[in-house]
Image (cartoon, rainbow, N blue to C red; front, side, top):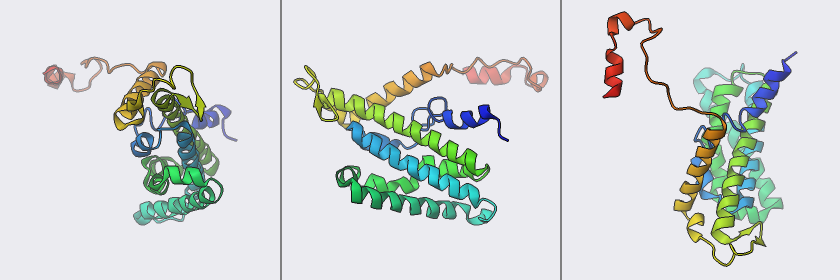
Length: 226
């Protein structure tokens, strides 16, 4: 029986501490391209979450069957299959969102987050843990896109999900729905996540405890200072 703490950890790590977008800096292309509106961010995030969870489950189930020599092409084929499914579903039931996401929906196939989790986690762990990993990472990605989309939409258009916001709707800062605004909002969110996650700058290089200290005599520290 799996430890409840470790199971919960597999899910929560993708939300903040290992957020694929705000910590891992993966999936930057859709993050910057589709987050001009909050609903676009949610749509892209949930579509990616669906593909992440399903592909992780299948890859984990087949990890002993897939030959190592062709594992990456096999992963991409599995991922592409689920991307096709979500494209058909979105085109049939959410045509406006499908049109808004455009080519970036198809590009989920080569999203570094999905292929990275398949290679680093799903191909080495059990089905349940892989499903939780995919769900946590997907929701973390969705959260990042939703926050970016909300901030850019509110400041850049003066509205949120179509609702006009007093004062802001009369004086929108349209730069925030342009690429420069996307980079600015992304940078601010990354800074906030690092602050709340308690990330600290690297410690000063020290010779204490180094097995090569007697041979090096502090030379590596001097080179680093230069």
